[in-house]
Amino acid sequence: MKHFLPIAALSLFALLQSFSFTGCSSTRQSEQIEFLSAERLVNKLEANRRTIRSFEGTGSIDVKTPSFDNSASFRIVVQKPDSIYLSIYGPFGIDLAQILVTKTNFTFYEAIHNTVYTGKVNDDILKEIFKVDLPLSDLLDAFTGAVNFSPRLYKEPTSFQIVQDKYLLTYIDSTAKTVTRYTVDVKDLSVISSKVEDLDGNIVTRCEYSSFVILANVSAPQKIVIKQERKKQALTIQYNTISANKKTIKIDLSIPDNADIIKW
Image (cartoon, rainbow, N blue to C red):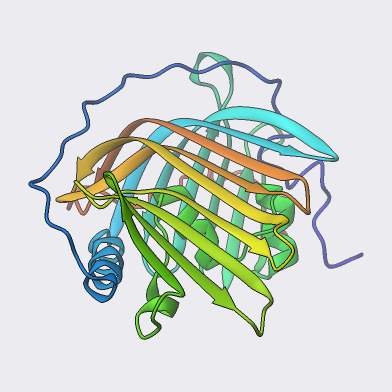
């Protein structure tokens, strides 16, 4: 369709060959154990998510879909509520692409052809850029390793259990015909996993979080795996470095003056 950017030009990963990435690990910290009620737990989890107002990280990203399978190293800056800046690098740190997405607009700079694409943001454009079918709000949470509990703030869970050192929360949505399950570490309130199933027990979406560190006084994962089973899509993010809420964090999109500009 004429309103979509060419896939070859608007893929952060089509420019790359797959390569491996290794990073440093950090020691997970823990707090004194305090058992919380379901209401207090959900309120605390959502407060922790909102604590991260800006975020910067470097690492590797891997995307697998029925039509796409590739990985890259990257640097990301997230400024909530609605801005993502991403730099994609090839071997030896060569800058291949830069992308800035806000609530209303996007700018995509393809370094190899020195070309800039700009236009209005919609879900189809986001899918072409990131190769996974996620709206902007979910992308923000995905890249920061956050789980959005705001829809759960005023709803009692269908089931709430404390099993050894884990909280287990289950929500059944009869309207959406889904069952959502969360596993949360008791010690540092890190969300270890979330899973959405249909009423027949078939998995729709599964998220896994690991390699936690303390960031802005809350637990944050350095590895994020998001699998959309029905769509056969998988997004894996492995961070080497992360930081949050620092005054020095800023979006620094840099485009040469002689770049060609194409508006969409």
